[in-house]
Amino acid sequence: MSQHFDAVVIGTGQGGSPLAVRLAQSGRRTAVIERHLFGGTCVNVGCTPTKTYVASARAAHVARTAAQYGVMIGGDITIDMARVKARKDEVIGGSRSGIESWLRGTENLTVFRGHGRFTGPHALRIEASGGSTQDIEADLVFINTGTRAAVPKVEGLERVPYLTNSTILELTEVPEHLVIVGASYIALEFGQMFRRFGSRVTLLVRGERILTREDEDFARAMQEVFVREGIEFCFGAQIGRVEALADGVRIVTGDETIDASHLLFATGRTPNTDDLGLEHAGIAVNRHGMIDVDGQLRTKAEGVYALGDVNGRGAFTHTSWNDYEIIASNLLDGESRSVDTRIMAYAVFVDPPFARVGMSEDEVRKDGREALIATMPMTRVGRARERGETDGFMKALVDARTRRFLGAAIYGIEGDEAIHTFIDVMSADAPYMTLRRAMHIHPTVSELIPTLLGGLKVLG
Image (cartoon, rainbow, N blue to C red; front, side):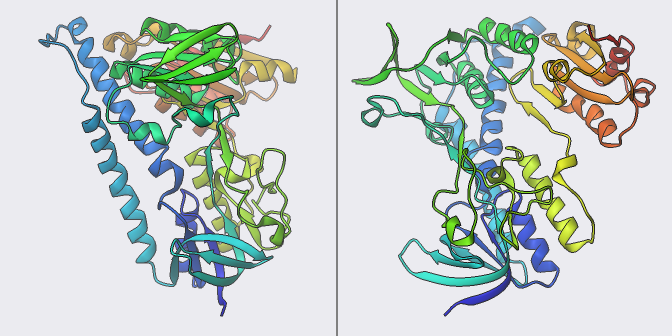
């Protein structure tokens, strides 16, 4: 017998969990379905665990470089990977159990454990791990099933142990030689952290530079920092095949071979849409496997929404949360918000971090509009000099006609926090002079942003 609900949320990621609670609190009889781990990618294999590892790696780096600051530490700095992992497990365990308790303790909300598949436009069958099934129906359906690691087809890979961003978090020993396939955010974060843990790290880059979505000057600056820390790069490298070794894996790229203890694929994400029975709901996926949505995150099926990574409108925790806010505002608060007006912003949590909002310089140039540009090296920032961390620079781009920001990026100490000064002004649709004339606190990174804007000149 099928149970009827006013709303059902499939998945308990960063958008799904708060949406389920908010719907239930509004008086709607709501169900939420989770087939594996509460909290989704961010809590379990994404932001939370990786940032705990980044913190451990940062601590090791600071200890090794302490003598530069007059702090003498006797003996070698070593890593207890099992303790690093245990700390990570404790952090994510608390978050995961907290989310589950929150959901189960919410009045008017029913939690189902199992895999949900559409059997009709508003009908779902939930299959539990033991094989039992439960049929439910709902007036509104919200898909929040997220993504998983994408691994390319490589000859011999089925006979070789390899790692993804999820499985590498289960290691209890520091890899002797970690080869990473990829050159974007995930690859760079893991590359630096494991180098700081003590691994030899080699990045196999398909093209001729890292961070191909960013301006080349930022990519080159980050690469210089990585090389200085001892990370190796192989550009123009594409895996032909892999072979198992007694103590690792052999990677063949063209005429060259690399022997490694561990192989990590950081080659993107695949949406979890292939086993949802979407065809029964009248929903097709695009060529990337994503579910297309409109500005209010509605699919082509009436009453069915998609939020989070699965809709292709942003692959970050903060975009997933914002998806929830948009849906809740429109359905429950009588507003008319749209994802189409969202200003994209994100960070790469390497050290120093890289953060960007809006358009890059390359995008502005391709757009052809008249613009102003300003750059400033982090060597001019007092906070950076005081901390002895002066790598990187800032960049801002302004529309010459409207005087509004087009975009900004910071690669440097605390750039992931300082970028929010730009985000806030851009969200307020205020002219750049609002920020140019602001009085900021000394000594901070943000205090130099008005000075940066004082150097705006025509983008030639």
